[in-house]
Length: 102
Image 1 (tube, rainbow, N blue to C red):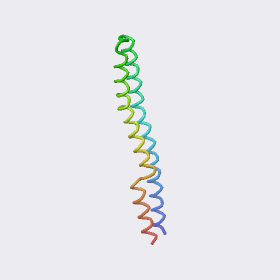
Image 2: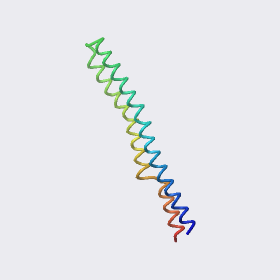
Image 3: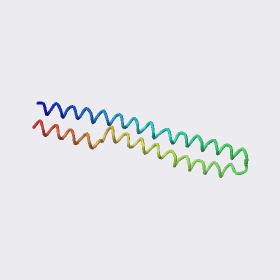
Image 4: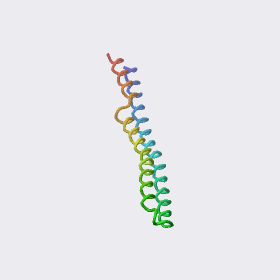
């Protein structure tokens, strides 16, 4: 029974660390792209103000760049979802608990 309780404790630790890591991933993974997008838009607006004739080219290039910047935040979101819902460590610990109980 003591081994089963210790495995349950480990399961709780794995769950806690997974949730904390998913939150940290989203926090750090969204700050960088947000700052990058803000700087990109500010620079594009400044460029359009200086050369209004090139507004179409600048805008097109801006949107392509914003898509690349936003992909970093999307990747962090996918990693956070994997940590929360498809965590391989979670399955390993659950399997170990089932083995110990059997």
